[in-house]
Length: 114
Ligand code: SF4
Image (cartoon, rainbow, N blue to C red; front, top):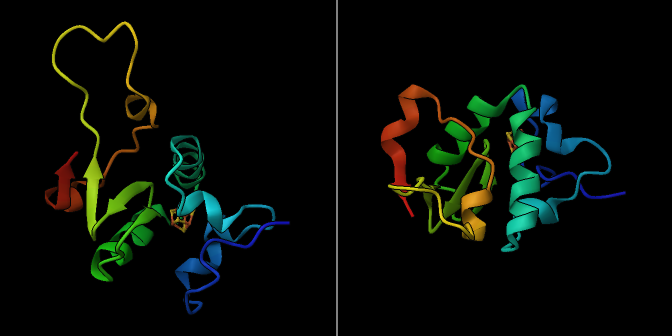
C-alpha cells in the first residue's frame, strides 16, 4: 500500500476528493524525476475531480516541484512541454511522450515553456 500523495497537506474540503489520496497510489510518483513516474502521476491527475482546484492551490502555494493538478512544476513554476514545430521526430524525446493535460484558461498565463 502506498502513501497518499497529499498526506502532507492539511485536509481541506477539496483535497478529501483527491485521487492521489486513494490507497495504493504512492507519493513517489508525484515527486519523481523519472519520466515514466511523472507520466503516471499526470494520468492519475487527469482522472481527478479536483484537478483545477489542486492546480490553483499549487500555484498559490508556489509549490517548488512535483506534479500538481496534472502539471509538472520545477523551481516553483508550472512547466509546459510544447510540441515542437515541423514533422514529428522519428525518435521522439522521452519528455514529448508525457500526457498533455490542458491547463484551465484562467491559469494559462502561469505556464513556462520547457
Ligand atoms: S490533481 Fe493530481 S495531485 Fe492534485 S489532488 Fe488530484 S490527483 Fe492529487
